[in-house]
Amino acid sequence: MTAEKALSLNTPTDNLFSRGMLALLVAQFISALADNALLFAAIAMLKAMAAPNWHMPLLQEFFVIAFILLAPFVGPFADHWPKGRVLLISNMLKFLGVGAMLAGLHPLLAYGMVGIGAAAYSPAKYGILRELVGAEKLVKANSMIEGSTIVAILLGAVLGGWLADISVTIALVVISGCYIAAAIANLLIPRLPPAHRMAHFTPGLLIKDFLSVFKVLINNPDARFALIGTSIFWSAGSTLRFLLIAWVPVSLGIMDNSTPANLSGVVAIGIAIGAGAAARFVTLKTVNRALYAGLLIGVLIMLFSFAHSLSAAAIMLVLIGICGGFYVVPLNALIQERGHETVGSGHAIATLNFFESSCMISIVGIYTLMARSGIDAVSLVILFGALILVAVGILSWFRVGKAQTSLR
Image 1 (cartoon, helix red, strand yellow):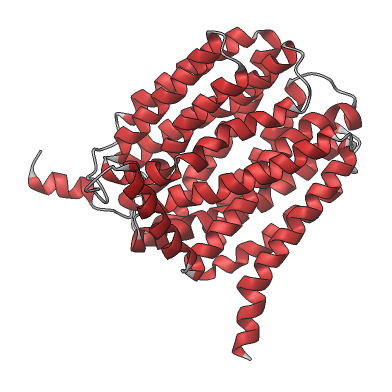
Image 2: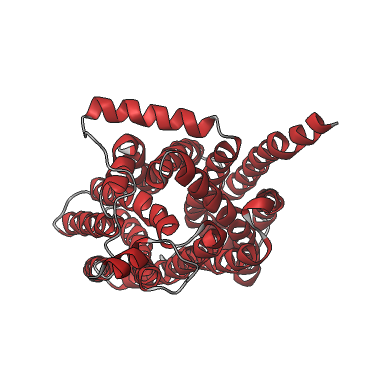
């Protein structure tokens, strides 16, 4: 490869359809499809084992614990090596987790193994965007990734629920094949130079480095806003999936695996629409516009609890998804840009994952305790919507309200 060609591959461009972006989009689509299909296959396996209903949200707890425990290490790992190769390794770790589930390991433990691969995957997936495109195209690039992910969530949820109703074993075999295909697509991503090589990989020093990065991002108003805002969103999304599993039999009288999975996919359709709207109407300079959509998420979830038909539920979930996409895409772009400017995008995304996962474990844990205590599904949905509304309301006050007050 000539020096000129190498430079062109290693320099961010305004081309949203470069070889690197297209390879990333394909790999992300296949990997995300497998991730979402696996959740419903694991739920079906727990049902087949006659596990208590409150074991199902524990799947999320086992999955995200890796994001917390490995946060000091996966960011430096993603920034130290070419990110395309990090994505490849991560997909193979997910593949091993599915293989363990096929071999008979308890679904909670096997799903936790997949979480290790996902924890390593995320900093590389988001961090590489800033290396492929310039800052002015970052929101649009995020919209493309989120759009690809959302379509994958839609198809993955539908595929996972459908295959699980046929055979959990067949579902797991198909999912394994998807991870292999995603790994092959990762090989097509150009070998970009590492963003921030580490001089050491000593655990104690990496933890110290993580705490230093954490402090830098928390002290940056934009980064702090994005960390908290995206954490609220992904906690809401994770909990909503399990709420649907409990709500569908009670409110719609449908007992299969496919309907909650399909409704999760319906949310994904809305997120794809919202992500496209964010790319059109929001930039890093106007990121506060996302807060209005965030507030609507909580309101719409509470209204959703009163739906009593499949069509009404689907319409409400599409609206929730639209608000979610419009809310989260600009915040993702904001943390990537501020992270790239300060501590490295991989480090920033690992810190973001730590925030999101800690929040996710807390909110899903609260939901698990409420479900175990016997609170009915409709009340759970109302309480959950109110919690999201209050959380985004407080965030909005500190971001916008206090800023306006200080200007007076």
